[in-house]
Length: 220
Image: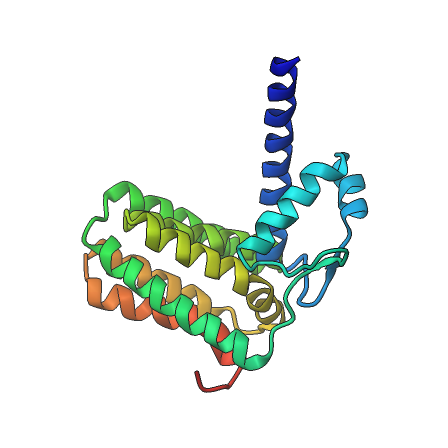
């Protein structure tokens, strides 16, 4: 009986982890909008799971401030004020800048090749008017630079802020008409990293990450 309970808990955790990953992706790609409510029942039906793993995934996201929720109330995507969103983008840019600066000193050829492949994927997605794919590849690009810094604390904090700003970044990207801004920005970042120019890499990634803040012309 004990063995069965342990197995059940493990399966539940695996299912919860899957729901958690899927919901994070929805936040990144703009499939979940600011202020949107998330129904446990609807999500359980969507993933064909019981309510338990869905509830655990929502709780975890709420503990990371990616969602908000209270007892007996639905979980929601935070509906931030312009000032709150601006502050999140500001801090995210600072953390990403630090990541890029450190990463530039540790970069390997395989890192540059991978970042170039992601940049090409973004260009292709943009030309196909596929904002969701663009946003997913953009997250992979930024999160890979976090990992290149080899600082788990910095990586965790930067990734958390990316997830939390995801719905607002997605709104801006989907309304953006000039894709050249993004294409040049990523190419410049890759070039700076390949040349191990830590100062320029930091500057460019901060500019790229601060773009979302410009949607909210508010002083921080």
